[in-house]
Structure formats: C-alpha cells, structure tokens
Length: 372
Image (cartoon, rainbow, N blue to C red; front, side, top):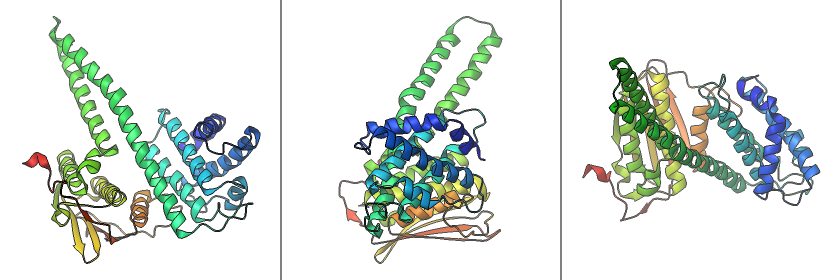
C-alpha cells in the first residue's frame, strides 16, 4: 500500500466525518438524511480508498469496482456526485498536507492526479446518469463540462493555497528575518554573529523558494496580461533558476487574448513540460513556440536532452501522471497532444488546438511591460 493510501486508511473515520461536514456546509445532498448520507459516503469512500491503494503502487487492475460505486451513488445527480467528490478530494488533500512524517516529495501532486482520475472516471464510465432515477446517459458535452469543473476546482485550490502561503508562511518568514536583523545589530561574540548570518541566508533562501512556489501556484499575470506575457515571465524565471537556456517564439499571439480555459491549459502544459525537462532530460537547451496554422493554434515544447521511449498512456496509468495530465488538459480545450521522442534524440511535444477562440484586445500589451 502506498504512503497516500496508508495515511488516509489510518484516518478513514476522520476523513469521512470531515467530508460529511463539508458537504453539509456546501449544501451538497442537503435533503438526504444524515444516516443515509453517512452510509452512502462510507461506500463511496471504500471504492475511493481501494483505487488510491492500487493506483498509488502502479498495480495492474487498479480500476474501481464501478458497479459498487454506481450503487453507492444511487439517486445522486451529476452535480451532487461531482460536488461531493471534489469535497472529498479537498478534505483528503488538506489532511495529507498535515502529515509530514515520511511523506514522499511528490505525494500531494500524486494524490491530486489519482483523485482526479477517479472523479473523471465516475463521469466517463456513466456511473452517474444511469442510476435508480433512470437518468439518460451523460453526453459528451456534459462530460466536458464536468472535466472543466475539475480543472477549475484545481485552479481555485491552487489560488487558495497560494493566498495562505503568502498571508501566513510569508509573513512568518518576514518576521523572522526582521528579528534576525535586530539580533545582528546587538553586541555579541563573532561566532554567534556568524551563526545569525547563516540563519539570515537560510531565511532569505526559504522566502525566495516560497515566492517561487506562490508564483507557480497562482500566475496572476496570466489573468491580467495574458498567455504570452505569463509564459515570458515564467520561462525567464525557469531559466534563471535551472541554468537551462530556453529559446522562445511567441510573437504569433502578440496582442491576442485566448479564452481563459485555453490560456490556463496551455500555460500548465508548458509548466509541466519544462519541469520534466529540468528533472529528467539532462538537456542544455529547450524551446517554446506558439504558431498559428490556419484555424489552429500550435504549441511546441522541445529539448535536446536524453529522450525516452514514448509510453502508451491510458486510464489508471500511475507511472506517467505528468504526461497524462498534459494530454487531459489538451483534450479539455478540444486539442490534441502528441509526443515525439527516442533515447538520445531529445523530446518534442506538440499541442494543436483547433479554433482556439482568439480575440483581439487592444488594451492587452503584446510584451512584458517591464521591458519598456
């Protein structure tokens, strides 16, 4: 059993109680009696936990028992099911964030991806929409809307965490640095002064890392100035932090704003792709290009790194969550993601988005205003 599943299993009763309380607070299944809601929540949680346990270890056959999930969700509308599962996701994520002992570095991100696969599976497998109320099968349009809500929930959660980090952790680190500066001004032996200087360096480094994390969680510049400026700033910071040379060609969208869903999807795909380059590719150069081809927008991210054998990525794949996440984000905006790579030959990622909904906004700057 993975660390994620083990921790949630050990605190299953606590999770279920917090989940029920959250559903009541958000008005989800408001008319369902407490006893019935508790019983159904326990059945859904059991299937959820089984999926986390198997997917988290990469076992074959990690799909939930959709028949059991369907019975647990009997009588729930699509809206109720989605709201309830997003609430369960949030409760579990908050709990895992408090568990420091033995937590793997990527545990939270891994949990989010596994949980999102479960939630989208509930929709794509027709688990709701075919219940005891004999609702019609969920249409492709409804599935797309649900997936959009999952992505929107992810972005809202990122914003919430970024705000909390800024308001709480950021202020605490700033207060610590002020206190250290006051100590530095006091009379003390040289050895203690050197120790304080080291603490100041550590605090400064922690604050820089915190600002970087907040920026990655909530790129407010994307909302304010658009995709081109947001990518320019992100790539500039990425190159400074990693030492990797990143070439860009983004002029095709200068002065153009896309639909918000398209902008955030493409931004996150670039973010994930460059993160993979930094972690795995052993590259010296990467490039990010945006091109308009007819009625389509083409995003290209490539590197000169070590390359790899491109895997077959499918539902429940627990080894390639990053690649799978990029594919899903592309699909959500009606696009297609293609990966070309081989050992020793670098990697190229193509994302083609047909008719991306471009619209001119004269007020939007075409370049980073700080450069003027």
